[in-house]
Amino acid sequence: MELNDIRDFLNKLVDCEITTHTISRNHQRALGIYPRRGATPYDPGVGCHRFVRVLPVTLLLRWGRNGAEAERAARELHNAIERAEVEQGIVAPVNDAPVWVGADERGVFEYTMDVDFYVVGNNPKH
Image (cartoon, rainbow, N blue to C red):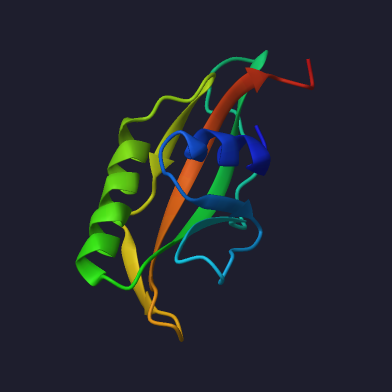
């Protein structure tokens, strides 16, 4: 699983433009996917022939100029991610709720959330 796979997964959960490594400031409704630093593949005891790779990302959701509507959309996305199932893995929000980061220079509200994708696969060392 890579960032494009995460984008495809999120396309099923939210109806807006979704991009990786950037976000469109021209759209009032957009979602940007950014990699987070620090996580590496690890084996939590699944077995010598299996491993778990963590793909940590930060999502930035832009959702219009109505604060209540933007908050509702951010919570709905967060809840959908909590309930979602990923083929051969687990998706887990790091935050308890989306974090409001303010509005941009055009008054478009933005929320962020950190999400970890745990992908179970065959250990490439075996």
